[in-house]
Length: 285
Image (cartoon, helix red, strand yellow):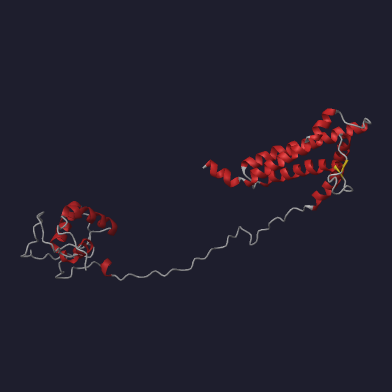
């Protein structure tokens, strides 16, 4: 079943803005048939719209081909008067308002010309003569010289931390008494492993640029602090060794004894800052 149209015809005043917009789209005054097909109106109303458009813009409807519109005699039957009274239950369909076209209106040369399909040509990208065919990319920087430089530094740092640990009370302990009495370990090795390993790891996190801002900031300051602390430890050991001291002063002993705890706290904090990236972003939202 065809959808019913409103029983009240649309007046010309409401169709004029749409007709002006159609003129702007086509770049010319539309024909009567175009108005009838576009707005689904009859021939008298289409002629009235054309007359109103001609009065508003008399110079914007050029006719280079010299064609003219043949006017038809006024129809004997007038259109039904628009009233707002109660209409019968059955309403006219959408096509009831469109009157059959009695005669074909002259068509301009632009309308009669068939539309030609424009064949799309493949787009070719011209090669830039100023750009070389293959750009030479620099290769990765070799890492083995760094390992060669770090080896003597590792030996010196290891020996310095172990010697400082022995001067501050670190030495042989049995971590498993009653279970493995013969198992012993020298706790002095915990100093170079903890402090220097954390300094290298925090330095890597800081310079990687792949962590959040908070973790990167913490890694930066903790790495610099660990390197400075390591340098002070080496200075203290060599000064006491040169002075022939067999035990460190109590201030140095207290500071060295706190190093394992400090390294544990900084390492755990840095790990949490790296892992809690998503939670931190959700809190900021």
